[in-house]
Image (cartoon, rainbow over all chains, first blue to last red; front, side, top):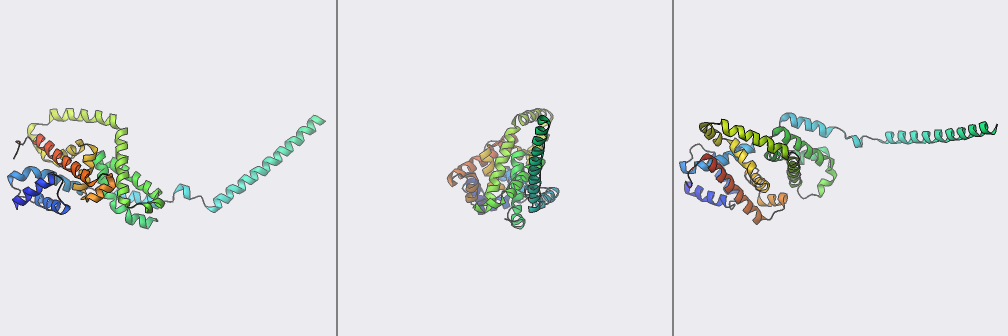
Amino acid sequence: MNQDIEQLLEKYYEGETSLQEEKQLRQFFQQENIPQHLQSHAAQFRYFASARTQHPSIAFTNQLATKLSAPEPGRVISLTTWSLRLAASVALLILGFYAGLFYTHWRTDSTGG
Amino acid sequence: MDLQVFKQRILPVQGRLFRLAQLFLRNREEAEDALQDVLLRLWTNRQQLDAYHSVEALAVQMTKNLCLDRLKAHNKRKVADDSALLGIATEEISPYRRVEVADSNELLKQLMDELPDQQKLVLHLRDVEEYSFDEIEQVTGLSVNNIRVILSRARQRLRDNYLKVNDYESGH
């Protein structure tokens, strides 16, 4: 068993192990009684194992779910909003037209008299 | 892609993205912030996601790039902080305590952080996330041969640096 592990370790450091073989190494270094001469390899496998258990917090996940379900500001503009905007601009245009007409009228009246 | 599909396809990998962000940023809050940024960007661009062969690979790539950008932006501040911390740490920690710390995952976290970005990324994807070489290729764009070389260097370097701190005899 230990000899297998030593061979696997050698392959591991060469970047030549398969996922299956790496699983074997991980399992080996998970156990309590690791032979003295292999001890120094254990730390990194333990680190990888603990790193694997890290997750974002529940609060984060909940907050994200709310953000994803919220309607986006860009898409809220519905048909009614658009027609309202259109109506408003038309009204403004007409108002401007009449204001201009009234003004020219008033000017010709005052200068002409 | 509607919310349901998005939740099914993207949210299962958020743990992965989080761990990757934490690897680079070394801070839970910053990692969550980066993760949220990536997920919201994906959500905004959800109409284009179907065109990608692997949405997960895309998400991992985005996370890595975002983290590296943020690190670059904060680089000056970070370097200053780190050197200040290290200065105190080396003075105050007794040799006995150092051995204790050296055994812990904290040390390995720090040694991981000292690896060049590419080595760090490839090693993390392989040994923490158990990615196949094909999957690593999709994320990094590196050839399988190249990945093996980088992985080998990263594993050896991590071990060498660990041994250095722990004062093991050379050879064992």
